[in-house]
Image (cartoon, rainbow, N blue to C red; front, side, top):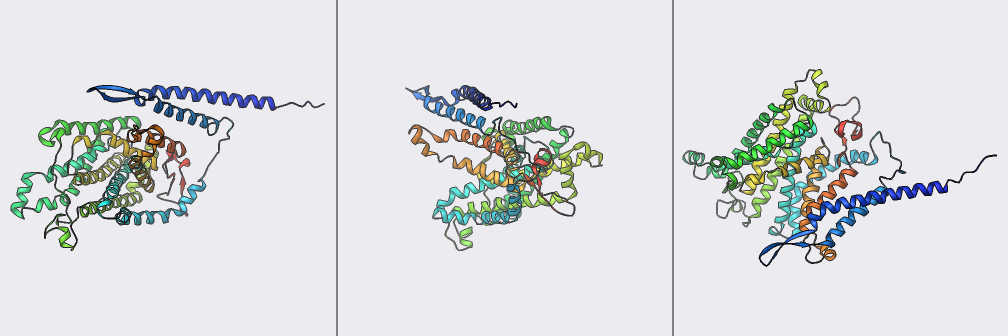
Length: 478
């Protein structure tokens, strides 16, 4: 006779075990969060009777730890539950296929939006002067888009982890700053052409020179690291970025040291300055003078430089050097066995990526009118690398979207005044921008570990062109 076994108690015991494990793990995570966030959030420095003191904030700390505790508990019971059957996927998802279909439409739409953005900003803000903040934000985003595309050549296409990309950014900025403020060069052109020639045309002459100097420094960095890969390469490039910054600080006679270089000539409309008077840009085109004219022109300058970077990258990918970069990224040993000169391949990747970083640095100098070593710290390199990884290494559109999300999101997090309703009027939301931003980054990388755009269009294909899913190629490149 068959024996009937009641499985209900066993199932209940398994559920209780899972719940107990989830609670234990969440409790341990909460304790770790309490230990980490206690000194950072639990205490606030204040001035008491003219002396520096500490103010304890238990409510804010309790809310933060509670969010982490319940978030971890929910993840243990849902996404990380032992009873959850993992999905085995060997091809593109529905979202990947949808992205491949609408991709040809999205790119022209984003380009049209970028071109029309100043007009949209003016219309949205209600005037030319009120749109300054939005146009400034657009310039910042496009600058990081260009830097992300430049680093994408080194990291995404060639597979060379570079943590010192800010060094090339600094070389481009200081190249323009030193040449544009050089009195001997100014006197030479003043005697040859005219007094105002160099100040009006310095940016347009120095822009290609900044790219060339940065590309040269990229090759200088490439020679010592030809035999390095992975973590060792990252450490050396990080050291290179710090060496450049320390040289800028300590070579006071040449770079100005920590004081930097000020009074850098502003950009002109191909020799026509953006100033009041009969010789200015506004008088030339019959417009009322506004300082926003220069800012909008700077927006289109960085847009043109970013599009130049994208166009050059796409074209280079289809050339033999681009295919050599991708082969080097996938397997350097196989690349050598095929007869590819890995030395030239690495140097070309470093030089090309550094050149576009130099262009962006030159633009930064003319936009800010002042450069100093404090503008080129490791944080900039980390941000650019995060943009490349978050967008999807090797993906142009992914890097652009990631730059817009990261830089635009960072600015949007300044407007968190509604949180004062929960934590009181003494709560300063701007102090928690990086914390909230870090949580968002972790969530995105858990949700999309291979980047926002995980599919790649192959450079070469047989018979039919098909998108390659990120989970079918090494490290999600493709």
